[in-house]
Image 1: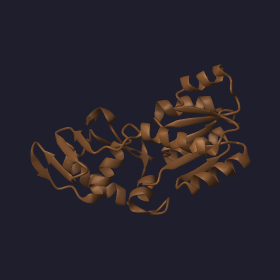
Image 2 (image 1 turned 90 degrees about the vertical axis):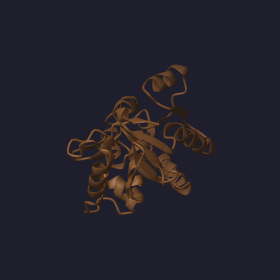
Image 3 (image 1 turned 90 degrees about the horizontal axis):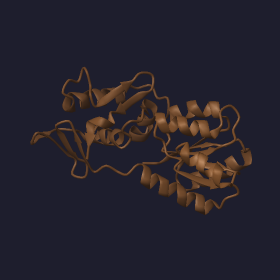
Length: 228
C-alpha cells in the first residue's frame, strides 16, 4: 500500500521540492504550512510519517511532535535550520524519530524516511487477538483450533488496523487505502465489514474489546488486546 507523508513546512519553495520528490518516489503526500492546520491534516490523513519543521506559525513543531507522539504514535522526522546539539536533543526528547538540518541532501532524506518507516511499522504476519489466531500469510484464522471463515477483505482490514494498533484510522483513509475509493466517498462499506468482523472475532460484538469505534473519526485496534 502507498505510504502517506504529511509535510508541515512554511517555506513554500522547500515544501514544493519535498512534495515533488516524495511523489516521484511513490508516496502520497499532503502539505500544510501552519501548525494549527497540521492538527486537522494529521487527523484526516492518518499519515504513515510526518516531515515536520520546528519553526512554524500557529503551533511550533516541538509542541506538535510531543502531541502526536502521545496521541497518534506517528513517526516524525524534524526538519530545521537549527544545527546545535542542544536543539537536536530537544527534538529527540519531544519524541522525534529522526532529525535533519537544512540544507540537506534529498537522497539522504529519502533514505532516512524509508529507514524510519521500516522501524516504525513492521508488517504483521501472525496475530493473536483474544482466543483468535490469524495467519495473514496463509490467509487462515482459527478460534481454539476451529477454523474461522474470514473473507479477504476482513483479513486485510484486520491486518491494517493491527499494524496501526493504538492509532485512530479514519474511515476515509480505510476506504481510500483498502477499497480504492476517493476521499470523502459516501458509503458504509467500512462499517459493514467492521460489523461482520466483530461478529466473528469479538466475545461480544455489541461491546467490542478489540476494534473500537472512535466516533467522528473511524476505528482503532486496542493494542493491549494483541499479541504476536
